[in-house]
Amino acid sequence: MTPAAPVRVTSLTAYPVKSLGGAWLAAAEVEERGLRGDRRWAVVDPDGTKVTAREEHALLGLRAKPLPDGAVRLLSPEGDPIEVAPPRDAAPVAVRFSGQDEARPAGAEADAWLSERIGRPLRLVWQDDETHRPIRPEMGGLAGERNSLSDAAPLHVTSEASLRRLNDWVTETALERGEQPGEPLGHDRFRPNVVVEGGEPFAEDSWVGARIGDVPFRATMVCDRCVMTTIDRATGESAKEPIRSLARHRTWAGATWFGIRLTPVLPIASGAVIRLGDEVVPLLAQDPG
Image (cartoon, rainbow, N blue to C red; front, side, top):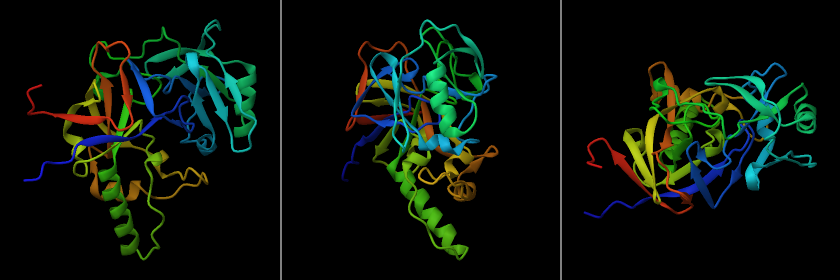
């Protein structure tokens, strides 16, 4: 029997600001809360309620690039980028995130840049190094595991094989309904940190953990999907896919599912890094280690 090809990392992305576009990376340092610089910033309204692309689709048209020492560069299609340093000395302000009730404000210049482009008053806030946001037990978290400002776990993984299967389903659904199939969906609809190639479609559902390069991770849960995946990143318009096809083939517990969530196994070795091309060794429930 021909041995199975190894699973490998084919894409690596950090999203410094929650709901904004991210930056492709060749390598990323792994910290307790995920990739260095990933989802450490977020957008809130004046009273501290988080604002995401679910309600403001235009956020997906902006991008954030991580810079050294936790800074970030915000970019828009019209140009005029802005660089924002972590506001380490700013007095915390109240925010409304699960497991976190305060963050540090980026300041008036960053707020004005965002507000002008989205068309409503907004603020940019930063999750400082002292913030501890536990992964909730109902989301698969264990004692001591912490999260960035991502929804449920530090690292999100999708697979090329699973996306190919999903795109097949999307095409089948369109043809059955007499519709013209659209362009295949990309992984950007799901905003993963890591994309892998190798293995069968949805094999990742059964992972209880994985070693990416030399870095071990623990699986917290399969990822439930929301309407944000139906927003076209280029146009900002909403459609029915992929939720329509996921609802036919990947529904349980009242939700639709695609991809998995991982958290680094603690303690994390100093200088832990994952890279494009790294081999990914899944850990299955029956595996001894």
